[in-house]
Image: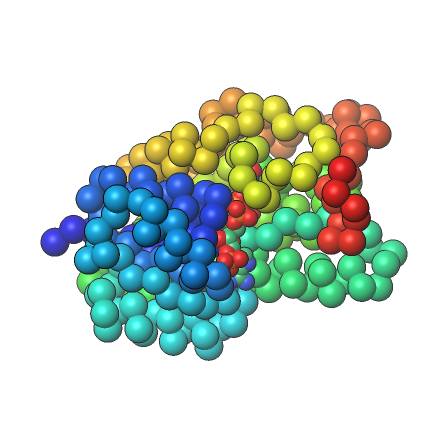
Length: 260
Ligand SMILES: NC(=O)c1ccc[n+]([C@@H]2O[C@H](COP(=O)([O-])OP(=O)(O)OC[C@H]3O[C@@H](n4cnc5c(N)ncnc54)[C@H](OP(=O)(O)O)[C@@H]3O)[C@@H](O)[C@H]2O)c1
């Protein structure tokens, strides 16, 4: 039986690229997004046969909706071999603006709770089978706090430590947990960034390296590797140096900022 890969955030960017890569590897796909019509459109334009995928419309921040999606997936396609919690949003916030705290709550609901809501329904069936891989998409932005980007950085920091906790919890069950931390990848999420994005990578290249890391069951991988070195350096950089390095760096645009 071909492996079944479930991917959230499959309507664009990294989710779409990983779906295409897995399809070319011969996998069956369970594709999740709110905009299921967008998923349908890019699938129709691809060479992927209609018998190798199912599309599920769901909001990762809706825990009950995700449980219903998971039940539908397992009934139609079986228990996935790989579940990739990729859906995420990235918006700048200004903590002194009241409405930005609602933006922050939305970022946390999507980026943090959404990962747990994606994994949760599959843990018991995977553990009963004794195999499966849960993949959390963190970010290099989760390693140190970037000015103006606090909500996103904190959410990705939470994803990294949450996945680490889960890895320990599931160690004896046969279910692996892989944390992937992308650097800068050219997707709609980064297209309005006004700052320099070192080692910017194309989503197809990311997908090729991500699927390899998942296949070998890496516990933690930064992609591209150059950003892995940057991430290691960031971890040990003293605060005074880190602050000086980031002084004057343009901020992540807020939801209400005009596009640059
Ligand atoms: N691009 C980068 O440089 C970069 C770097 C580090 C980490 N990442 C992470 O990589 C992941 C994918 O990002 P991307 O760059 O591919 O961004 P993207 O092109 O904007 O795609 C984001 C995806 O998430 C989905 N999504 C957002 N909110 C959702 C919700 N509430 N429920 C279900 N799906 C939702 C969107 O689908 P719908 O709108 O159709 O629901 C979309 O498919 C994110 O977790 C992001 O934080 C990206």
